Length: 488
Image (cartoon, rainbow, N blue to C red; front, side):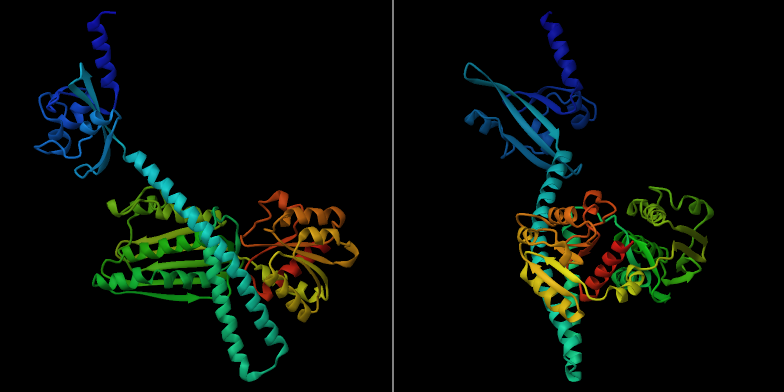
């Protein structure tokens, strides 16, 4: 191949590269460049004869942080990272000196956009930080849950065994404070979960609505008032209306509806939220007195990426609401007239909460012989004291290995075990128990929510799970549920 052909091929290769490549003289003048450099730096025109620092950094003098000299002196390739404010992107420059006979003949400058790489690196660093925070929070939550359970157990026992009217109010305040602490622990556990909660649980929909309205108050009250408009929210909610669902998803869906209603009332107005049981359905309405929507907008309201908010919206809010409702076996309808406001009507299947389903069973359980295994003495003390007052006979072990060695299936009606224990975890322990006594129901304690319908292997050995921290009433319901399941 002739030298001219080689040069032509090399030039063609460089023009296929998306990175900017400049061949510069020792005095920083561009002698040659590839197509990417001409397009980005010259608008498609030749940039030969221009200084590299003028093109890349809009400087009349050579850059003080130019890596060329450091590369020549060290013999090692140096690079420069910087942020280009004019196009809002990050770039990396590398200078490759050309040395012949000990003299610099020029250099090749390569410049590439590294914004995407930096974004990935930043996300990775953020993920690592969140994992570290999660590990710390998880440990704190675990320890606090055990302490809180001990406190709740003692308070419960004092209220059950000491009829002192003048102290009853104090006991109630203490119990309420401990339960507030338990709720804080649960929120920490939610934060540290590596998974997204997909399991459905009992949800008191009016309680969730009140919580969302309180949490969105800064948007519909303070922010609106600051803009010179008055927005008021009213509620008409039937008590104790339950659905089965995902708390986080429903929380976000209702938040979207509230925020959209506020945005639809530039001059202020009223938002009303209703919730009622109707036959076997739960009906929730969110109504605003805003600007309303045209028929054309109504046809597209649930389409992904459709938005009426311009650059301020991403068009995902209502499509996400639609998806949440469908995942909850529900329906969503919208009525709107221009200048008259909008009504969103959501329906969900009525749900009977777990605590109601097991209420009658609790009366049938009676006195049970329970084997409780947990490596934390706080939990074991909780079980011994509380179960004694309830009427159960309890044997406790801190070591699952020791519990297995001394296990006699004729002595127990139920087993309660922690999940995370040294030497032998709760699943392994439960499997060994089931191998010799498959008829005995087993309750698994865990700091994380566990859905047995998704954990098939675990469900083979476990009859019921309960998340720490839990109250006396919650463990009673778990015992009733496990007892009832074993009787089927």
